[in-house]
Figure 1 (cartoon, chains in turn brown, red):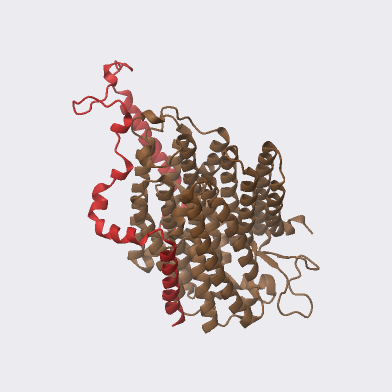
Figure 2 (cartoon, chains in turn green, yellow):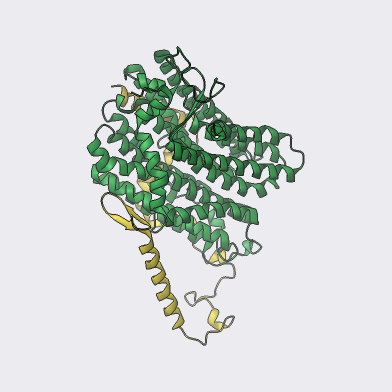
Amino acid sequence: MSWQVHLPALVVSVPLLGAFISIAMVKPRLRNLWFATILVATTILAFLMWRYVAINGTLVYVMGGERWNLTLPSGMTLPIRIIMEVDAFGAFMALAGSIATLASGLFSVRFLDRVNDGNKFVALFFLLFAGMLGLEVTGDFFNFFVFLEIASVASFGLIAFWRDRPEAIEASFKYAVLSTFVALIFLIGVGILYGVYGTLNMAAIAKNMQVGFLEKLALVLFIVSLAMKSGAVPLHMWEPDAYGQAPAGVSCFLVVVGQASLYGMFRIAFSVYGQAFEGNVLAWVIIVLGLLSMFIGVIMAVIQKEAKRLMAYHCISQTGYMLMGIGLGLLALSSSQAMSEYGFTAMKGGIFHIINNAMYKGLLFLTAGSLFYATGTTNLNKLGGLARKMPYTTFMFAVAAAAIAGLPPFNGFVSKLLIYESSFVVHPFLAVVAMVTSILTLASFVKVFQSGFLGPSRDDLNNVREVPLSMVVGMMVLCVMIISLSMMPNWVLANLIEPAARDLVNQASYIQAVMGSGL
Amino acid sequence: MVLGTVYTGFGFWNVYAWVMFFALGALIVLFLRSTGRGDYEKGTYQDEVFYGGNPVPQDGEDLAVPASSSYWGFTKALSRFYDVLVSMHTGILSDYMGILVVTVAVISILILL
């Protein structure tokens, strides 16, 4: 037995261990070293897990069982223990999230020198990391709720980390109230399914799923709660406040945490309900949420003058692309012809957009953090001419802005191209909205570039210097990822995206990994 | 499979073709730049900004277009739309909760009925 079968447990327990030990760290240098070590270690574990799943297929892990893969002990028809189930989609999400988290952590190391509560920051950061990865590896509804709450509580603390600023406290409070409300309705949904099926395991519920009124009600509660957590319009209003007030490294991290909620929505829609949910209503709900998020997000971004709020609105807009891409896949789920005609291409676009957004949106937040570190503000009216003083930040901002705007040859173009072409088959209006969104994205980042980096130097910014090396390295990680994803699109599609899309569509294999006999 | 080529099912796209296109563009730009005058001297009157014949402000802040003025025409033309949209983003938590409840209701009607 390879030690790698324990990877689903390790990716959650290592950052959890990191969180508890970091509280006891006395010396800041030792704590920073611990911070970087756990970040790197967890990212390596996530990579190994992705590699293991790519070679061996879906990985199932039973916590506290007689054997790590004994999902159904003799005489049992339903799994009772905590089961983690990692297919190519889950492993892909964990890998993408870990890389962005590593970058945001490295960026935050220097930031820790400026605060007195560095240990608490590191502890909350690792709790959030464990919560995010837990969401992506669990195969159990109740544990999904638990990890959702771990991630949420850690987020509240991190968003309000500048606790001497009333705006930060207010942003965190709003998010806390909304998040707690949706967590409770998610829990009601879990309770409904437990009441009907007597189990909390997703694969077991999927195997026995017969969609009636209660199942539909649970689905509504799941979709709404996870749409709110991922910042889909019209449930997005907490996001500009929260992302705008959190430290930049945390904002970058929250992007991938939001994507973990999207993962949950897609997992439930495809792997738990799948074709048992008849009709196209669910798919169209997700597509319309995507359309609204794309357009409203970007149109609000255009008028922002605060860089991090502007980027937060773009985050909402980019979530729309993912929702639309995967929603189109869901629309085609019941027809193999539609799936081959446009559905699979749309899903590839949506999933590719997940990793793209994690990289370029994360990098954009980090560049905004650099601006704040160097100038003390992210108000674009108070910035200008920084390209000469901050060349590395400027270069990396330009790369990320070009990528998010979907300019060729960057990675954002590839995922958007797949979404444009597949959505056009369903209805040209969908493709038009996606393209207009992309144009407005470019327009708003041109504004940021012009206001922040170009133009003559301002007297009050004469003493501005480039940010320290560790922050540049954090940004560099994501910049290198963007360029790599851009230069090897077919490798990425073949090895990362297509296996993830195939496993997401293949409900039978998801069920079989736990229940043995499939559908 | 051609290196760097993405097949979308409707067509294809090659990243290296675009990289070559940009490299070619950069070469043309560099060539045009090299044909410029050679007697340019940095730090002389040749460096001075032409500001419509007026004295150039000392502080760059007085020269730059602030971010809040960007796309003025666009936002002015869509001002009615923006008025509605911005008024929805009140920043008041109870409003956000209201929108959440309404969204639950709408999605419930769509999925349950």
